Length: 178
Length: 300
Image 1 (cartoon, rainbow over the protein chains, first blue to last red):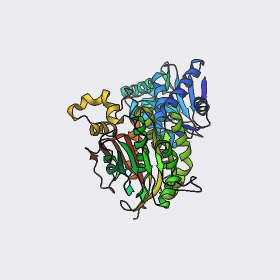
Image 2: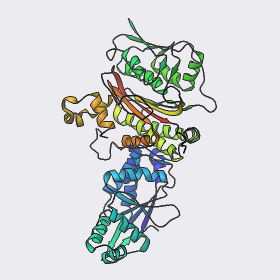
Image 3: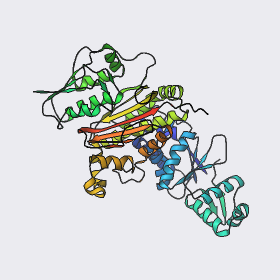
Image 4: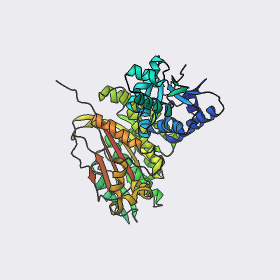
């Protein structure tokens, strides 16, 4: 089950003004607290954070909203971003790379997510493979990418640690985004 | 007795130290008169530097300083249009005729002299800048469209430094003008200044030990701008300046930060400034200047 959270709405609640710019740490912290409160009342598996009403995301807010959410959210959640523009990507990618974190982002008009932040190169390749081709086990991934078994396992373990694929039994599923 | 501090004829980051030197020991014991009668031009950095001095004197509970306004009508009108007198009237006893009213129509002043005291002010600044910034950065300076958003991010981060680190309020102003002498091109300048504790005191408890005897205003600026450290233990801090440096490098922009008795700059190829200036006359708080030049048309 997916819980869609409109960041623009939470921003307007947090600053009590019609601003569309997600800026400053206190604002970011207030928005993150509202996201956490929403998730606490939800039994969803995936939180889809929708940035489509947002004009600007600065570094401080990217850190407070996205990085800290990934650091603190309870491990049962998968977090996916949507509605991001290219410049949003830049800020979020920068802070996540700094923390060695990563998140999936669904570009407008597409169902195939892209990765923002930092994961090892093999994990990034494995993510693309699973996102585009569907669930795979380690052997299936290694077959598709012509990798050794240990390389494939390591890549999938990295993705699982970052909550970027959903392991079910022997299979690794793409995160549900719709 | 009154200490007279002359505002330089051409008042910008280069002549700022002359202005700062006029105050002597901080805070000066005498009543202060800031004399701008002979000033022919002031950058945003200069204008908010005057306000910072006024604010620092007020916070030191000194007698309200005097400010004699420029003699030149043109200069006065420009300062009025930039919102300077509106803010200065709170901090100084103004002497001389001040033009009424503010700007009308399109202007090179992207953001009036604006106080920054709280988070809400940063929201206001970013909201206000967005439309004009696109016109200047993309239309005049030839930067790509996404530059406007990076510019707004830089402005947001620079203003937040006041709210989070200064321990008091500050000022921001943004203006476009032609950098004739140094560059011969149009530039956009962000100036941010506060009368707060400065980088050295802000970072002292967390970082002074590491620097040992080297610790001072210069080392504190180096820690913040080069090593991206923050006074907070939160590992997510200190990224704002790192990001600003990254895109300034791409645009051949310049950032300089003055705090206490030192000034540290990331110097682009077109500028002849030295990276580190130490043993300057003391000035309260911190002053940041970001310069983004028009992009040169690449020819084959």
